[in-house]
Image 1 (cartoon, helix red, strand yellow):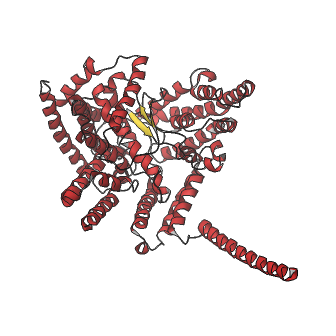
Image 2 (cartoon, one colour):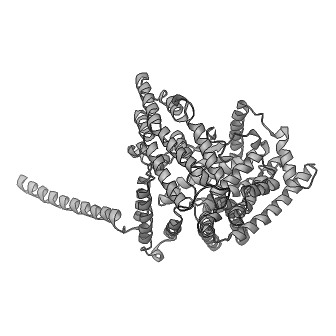
Length: 615
C-alpha cells in the first residue's frame, strides 16, 4: 500500500514537474518574444516600448514614480544621458519600433485597440519624420534647458524622504557636469549647422545662470533645498545630516558649478555670432521646419497663412464681445486694449507689491478653486483622484517663466499636481484674471485632464502619459468657456472680462506666432501687436513673445484645440438633441487620453452614432 502510494506520488510529481517546465518554457518564449522580437500581442508591444523608453530616462521614472512601489529606486540616482550616442540610439529605436508597430493587423483590432494603434503610430511617425530637424530648435533658452530644468527637477521631483533618497540626491548632483558637457556638445553641432538662437535668448540665459550660481554654496538653491529637507528626515541624526550636507556642498563645487561654467563660457563665445533675427525662417530650410512644428503642436495640416487669418478673425470677434461688456459696466471708450490696460492699472483690482500680498494671492487661488469645484456637478461624471496644490513659481526662474504652468502629479500618489503661479510682477496678476487662470491650470483644466489621463485603467501605459499639445491646451482653454457657461462669472462681469481677455490673448497668439516665423516679423513688431491688441501688462507681453520665438508653433495649439472641442460639442448637441448629455461628452473626451485632432473627431463621431442607435 505504501509502495503504491509512493509510486503514484512519484508519477504525479513527474507530471507536475512536466507541467511546470512547460509553463516555464511558455513564459520564457513569451518573454524572449516580447523583449527581442515582435511580441505576439500589440498590447505587450506597447508596454515594451513604454518600458524601454522609461528605462532610458531615469528623470521621467522619478517624475512618474511608477517603480517605487515595487521597491525599485536605483533610477533616482541617475540623470538622463544627453549624449549624441544616446540621441542616435533613440532615433534608431524609434524607427525600429514604428516598423514593428506597422506589422500588426490593424483591421483585426477592436475599436479601443485601433485607438491605441493610431495614437502611437501618429506620434512615432511624426517623430521619425522629425529626424531631419534633430538639430533645429533651441534646447537652451530663457524658458527651459538644463540650466533651469535640472534645478527645478531636483527641487520639485526628486524625493527626499529617507537616507537613500539623500544619497541619490548627491549622486545626481555629481552628474551635473557630465550632463552640461553633453549639452554643450549638442549646441556646438547646432551652431555648426547654422542653428543659433537670437541674441536676446543667450543674454537672458547668461544672466539667469549668473544669478543662479552667485554667492556662497550654502546660500544656493540646491544646497538650501537639501539642507531644509534632510534635517526633517526621520532616522537621520544630526551628525549624519551634517555629513550629507557637506557632500552636497562638495558635489556643487566639483560638478554643478563647473557644469554651469562650461555652458556659460560656450554661450559667451557664441554671443558674437548671434543676430536679432527672431523667426525660424532664418534657419536652414526654416519654412519647412516651421510647417513641421505647426503640425506637431496642432496635429493638423493648417498652413501658416490659414492660422494667421483665423487669428485675425478671432481677435476681431472677441474684442467686439469685450467692448460690449466693458460699455455695459459704464467704462467709456471704444478701444478695448486701452480700456483693459486702464482696468489692469485700477487699484481696486491690484494686490500691493509685498511678500504678504503674494502669499494672499496663493491663498485666494485656493479659495477660488474650492468654489469652482462646487460648480462641476452636472458637467462631469469623473473626477481625478490626485490632489492639487497652488505654489509660487521658483523665484530664481520667475523673471523669464510664463505667467503660470502646471506640473502633473506622481502616478503613485506621492506628489500632488501643482499649479504654479508667477508672482514676479504683481501687476501681472489683476484680480479679475485669477478665476480663469485657476480654471485653466487647475480644475477642470489641466489638473482634470492630466490627472484623469494618468489614472485611466485598462489602457496601455503610453496612453496615460502621451502628450498632444492641441488636445491638452485645447481642453484647458475650452474649460474657461465651460465655466463661464456654468455661471462662474454670473455676478462677476469683470471676472468674465478677464476670461475674454485670456481668450483674446490665445487668439493673438495665432497672429504673432505665424507673424514671427512665417511673415518675418521682428520681436518688436510682435510685441507691438500683442500690446496694442490685448491690454496685457508689458512684462507679460515681452515674456510671451519671447516664448513664441523659442517654441515655434506651440502657442497656436490652444485656440485651434479649443475651437475643435467646441465644434464637436455643438455637433453632438445638434445631432443628439434630447439624448445629448454634457457629462457623457466630457467622458468621451477625457476617458481616452490625449490624442490628435483627427482621432478626437473620430471618437466623438462614434459616440454620436452609438448614442443615436440606443433606444
